[in-house]
Image 1 (cartoon, one colour):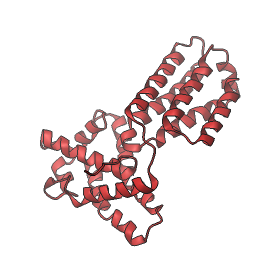
Image 2 (cartoon, one colour):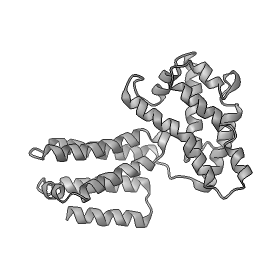
Image 3 (cartoon, helix red, strand yellow):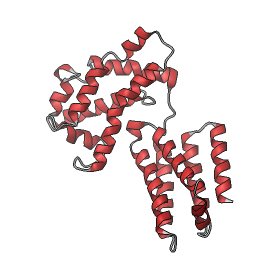
Image 4 (cartoon, helix red, strand yellow):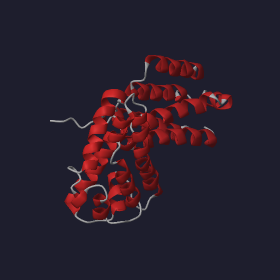
Length: 254
């Protein structure tokens, strides 16, 4: 039995399309945008749904970039993205409040998504990217560890009486970005989680005045380091990169 990989953008897009089809089978005809928002776990009328949907729309471009990076013959690369244009067009139409049946039929005749040439092509592309440029994947337990740790730090920041409101806003904004990246990892992979964590470290490290004020609040800086360590461990960062982050955190917490 073939393995369905989600450690690459082609695999993640295929998984999302199959989930859309499953929702269609369970519910029947519905507005495509509402179905998409439900899969993204956001209310269809919320700005956050649009933000997450933008990540979905970026998947075809990420697939093309990943395929372009392969040391393959150009004809082989073209074969891997042969049906991607139709899928991309369907994704655009899904955001325009069209019916789900019509959207699915744009790349899957008669709505037969699992057996469509487009989805089969995505599976072939996914297997190829898995073999050559696979990304590290965060499992459910790792995602839960990050969520619990980041949420705990947010509570500590909110409870820090006397901490300047601008520092609270700074920390909370970056911590919220990490949580949002974790919640959307099904679409984006772990890259945004790493980027949001790096942004947190950089935001603290480049502001001496923030460091000075944070050092007066008990274990808040050590808790930031603990949070970064938890994320880095989950991300399975390369040794040199992890050592660099530790050096930065040592400097700002000492």
